[in-house]
Image 1 (tube, rainbow, N blue to C red):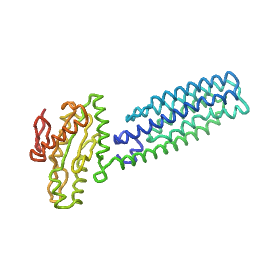
Image 2 (image 1 turned 90 degrees about the vertical axis):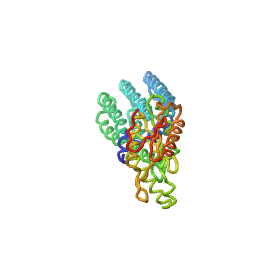
Image 3 (image 1 turned 45 degrees about the vertical axis):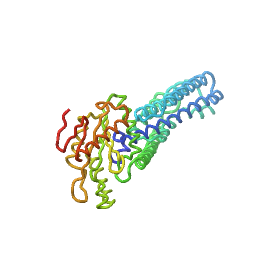
Length: 375
């Protein structure tokens, strides 16, 4: 997925970017909700001083209700790696002031307001500008920005059309155009945050040589994916690979050639695995492939492909092979991600002891290149 596509759509974001983005969105939703939960009822005193009864009473009730909703959103905003839940919390927070705007304007249009009160009432009329500008606080994609700005524009248009007796419709037309521009600027600001987040995650979570996930980032992803698999009762497979005779490359040709072999192996694995698979450099010449929602039978297929095609060419023009072990948490009865990794690791050693360029699949069964797996 290109950098531009990552800014337009979120469907192809790497898992760690989704996790970090979810954490950041929820954290900011919590902070913003708490701030407005306190500030919203604080304006009741101003309403009391400038509006007559019962208008200030209606507005006070609305403010108290909005403050309660903000507090509820803040309480629900617990740290999560689920980007879908983060989106729902963001939408819920933005709906609170939007609902306040939709209800307060029809109420105020029924009262005669002039003087200083008329000037201060513009704060209610142009509340959507605050909502729209708030999008810039969050790391959003272009499509998410469109989805967040569209309801505000629609509500602003509807209120201006049906409540033109409060403020002339001609005044709203210019406001709508300005509101749309602010929405575009806010979305671009959110996209720039997302771009920075993607770059930061990549720099901090990827191995600089092979450009796959580092062990530290990989462990975090394994914990999360295993927890999701257990919760959903979904299969989750781990492939453990160790490059065969890699020490000989470093000894005979130098570490620079060894680095080239590692980079080539990582590239082959990237091309062989699916986009949803997670490739981790576990250490030295060891790689780990995490395959969410993948049964044992399906996980064998890409591993066999690696055996048959190799992992690039060594400096002596021979294919670089790997010894591999495969484990799947349901079929192998693993209770934790560490147990699953350790089992795949043990099977990898069985494959190496069995002659290298092998795949150990359990029950002392080791597959050779070209040999098909049957349950």
